Image 1 (tube, rainbow, N blue to C red):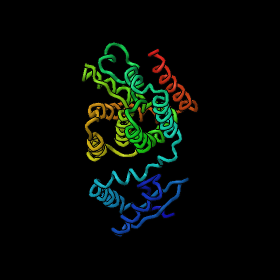
Image 2: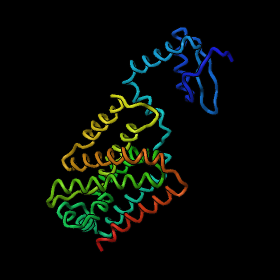
Image 3: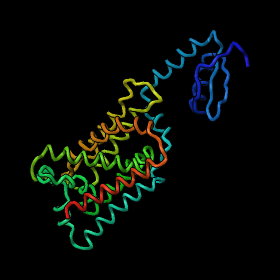
Image 4: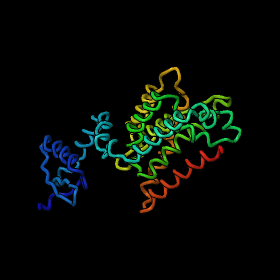
Length: 289
């Protein structure tokens, strides 16, 4: 290898390496490629180093508003491969079917729904149990679809145990904040608070990604998430503030959670988180009895 060449871009994935090579070649900058494990290093002549850096920086600066699409395409996620998400959807269906089959649907809503008045009087378990109750089949199917679209990617990115825990935490915090706002007999049910929490978590994941510097367009996912919440909060029976608080809960807890989740790595993390999550849910339903 020519000694006059030096590395300027290192450990690049194949697609990004191809893009940078194309940029440099278009500017008549001589390049060399060095493979390192599954990544690639790009080398340029020492005299072209400054020019190469400026050219690549200029390209990304000019195309910064297209960065969000590129980042989304890099996510190794698929909603249909998330078995925990399907398990959650199945649990929502079983609970709804149980309530209808035993003719206790209205009683369950009154006993376990997120009543702001009763939550503030100490029945905080309602902030959890309300997430698993739905008014009718349409309400249920909508939230099951939302779990597949937003919840499954969160689980894939977080882990099969920590993902469901974060969804439960965001939904619970959203219901508690909603109760503090209303302070009356306002009653709310449905998994949509947790689903909006999932949207907030996905935005937090984008903001806290450690492979890119913080810039103005880093906040683009936040604006997109806010628009999404507005679009999904239409309808006469929709609890808009529950959606807003769910999204905010997911956003702020995710900003803390994702960096910690990258640092804390041990084999039993997800199994323990899953057991902890199931214990919380079971305890919440038993609290009323």
